[in-house]
Amino acid sequence: MTGSTRSTFGRLGLLALAVLFIVAVTLSNRILRGARLDLTENQLYTLSEGTVRVLGAIEEPLNLYFFYSDKATTDIPYLRSYADRVRDTLREFSQHAQGRITVTEVDPIPFSDEEDQATQFGLQGVRLDNSADAVFMGIAGANSVGDDEILPFLDPGKEALLEYELAKLVYSLANPKRPVVGLLSSLPMNAGFDPMTQQVRQPWTITSQLRQLFELRELQASAAAIADDVQVLMVVHPKGLPESALYAIDQFILRGGRAILFVDPWCEADPGAGDPMNPAGGMASGGRSSSLDRIFGAWGIAVGTDNFVGDDGYALQVYSPQGQPVRDIGYAGIDNTGIDQDDVVTAGLSLLHLGYAGAITRSENAPAAVTPLVRSSEIAGTVGTAALGFMSDPALLRQGFKPTGERYTLAARITGDVPSAFAAGPPGGASAGEKGHLAKAAKAINVVVVADADLLADRMWVRAQDFFGQRVASAFANNGDFVVSAIDNLLGSSDLIGIRGRAKFSRPFKVVEELRRGAEDKFRVTEEQLKQDLDETERKLGELQASRQDGNALIMSPEQEKEIEAFREKRATIRRELRSVQRTLDRDIERLGNLLKAVNIGLVPLLITIVSIVVLIARRRSRGGAA
Image (cartoon, rainbow, N blue to C red; front, side, top):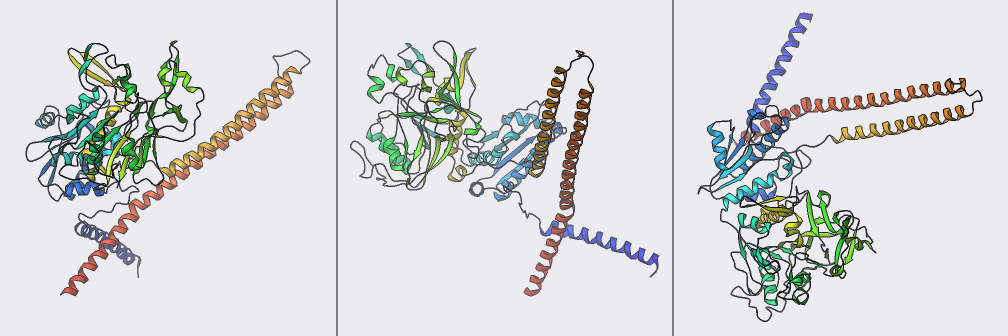
């Protein structure tokens, strides 16, 4: 065979391979259309079961509009990358909704009809540092009866909540009726007359926020039952509740009602003890503490009223009576290290302020499961509440304070099949009503318990002031976000509640980071050695200088010159070692990069081609067998 013939066959072989590759890609696009294989560690592109059920329950067509400033973000790569993530998630939503969700992407160019459409929905552009125009990156949804829901701006920093926020928006559009939240509280959370100041009392900021979002219905402690249309029950600092009210709470929860319960071993926001209209006041009804021991006991949990959690790790700074700053172990400023970032209720929260909070504990064989949402630091321990009523200097709390090393649960989600706290039936003065008495939960309960009520008070998380006749609130902690998020989550379906925060899409290169850490460790060791050698050289030079007899301090002796020369040689050797470590690190990273390129460019397409051919052959054989 001549050289020209071999050359011709070589060209034909390459051409045949190219044709085969094009045919394989075309066939794979047709055969595997719509097929997805999620190989990411945390299943980033796979919707959770709860989301799938929420989408499957949609009964009417919904329209979702993704307003994204594509042109304005040309030079903002992290937003463009996150926009792709949003598109993928919306595509998954549309596919699982079986045609009942229509997704439209809109680029609201400045001064365009699309920008007007975005502002009509209530979306606002955000002006970023490196963008000339305001950037839109939000979602608006509409149902068939004209109800709208929006996500004003999709923050890449809250990527873990993307699926939950979208599922919540879809659920709200599919269930548009305004939810009812029942509020049972012994604290002055609503507007009224303050006997202490003899003035009209403003409502707490949290109460005003809840009224904007929900239909907030105030309940009385004398109520023998909770209305059926109440979807979430919010109980705050329940002091001295009659048996009939406890029974109503018990049966409401057992029938599937959702609840968020705030109890407190020492509530500073409780004005009862100092009420001039009722001198015996708070002490007669349990002082500043509150509990639901009767109900909690049936669940197998407890929140003690004799002790609070002192926390030296999260202690906030206050001022003593002498005006000196002091860290008060009773006040905790809990950052994200003490807040569960996996539960959608607390994910994304960065700071919660609590005051003299209690500890939620669970007995060994409790029927209820306790999932901590907020925990103390490890430098924490319990402190008796007895001395708080007579203490003026918070520094005194440290006397005898001994951290236990335990992280105490301050807020938790309570779930499980629990029995009634009233095993014998309704107590005196209460009635089971038409539905009858429930001896145990009809289905697993879902309740959030918080061992502190002070976190709701304005002074713990928000500054509210009048601004030209309007009350403006400026939050310095996430207490309000926590409460609204908890109620919002409890209001959703059980599927929506079960959706937890997802892992982030942007993930570090762990292998590369480990290589860098190893190199940095070598650098630190070598640099430390260099520093020690330098210190030793300076010491020797000082000794040689002190031992000289000629008194000439300006001219170095031969011994000093020899010592300095030895140090210079050693320093050069160490620097060569440092450069060697850096070159080795660069080679390791480059080798890893080449391997990843080979896998992504060569191996993955080859595997897809092989799978496509196998599927095609299997289909043809099955058709031939059927014929």
